[in-house]
Length: 170
Image (tube, rainbow, N blue to C red):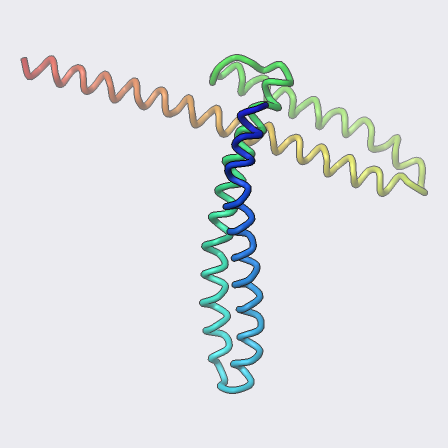
C-alpha cells in the first residue's frame, strides 16, 4: 500500500500538469478555430488540428502516468482478492473464473432488480457499470499476466539460442 501511495505522490504532479496542458491546448484549438475561420476560410481547421494534436500528446502522457498508477493499484487489488501466485496460467484461469462468476451473478440479480420500477432502472445501470469495471480489471490482469508469461518464454528461448551459439564457437 505504501508503494502505491508513494507512486501516486510521485506521479500526481506530472499527471495534473499533463492533463491541464491537454485541456488548455484542446480549448485553444476550439477558440482558435472559431476566430481564425472568421478571418480566413480553412485556417481555423488547420489551427484546430495542430492544437488537438499537441493536446493529444499531453493526453497520452497523462494516460501513461495513469497506467503506471493503475498497474500498481490493480496488482494490490488482485493480491487482496487472494490471487497471490506469480505470473502463471493458473492466475489467468482464476481471473477467467472471476469474470464468469461476475457475469452469472449479474445475470441472476438484474431480473430481480427490474421488478421495482422506481429505483430498478438506476440500480441496474449502476450495478452493471460496477460489474463492467471489475471485469475490465480482470481483463487487464489477464493481459498483464499473459504479457509477462510471453516475456518469460521469449527470454528463455533467447537464452537457449545464445547459450547454444556460445557452445558452437568453442
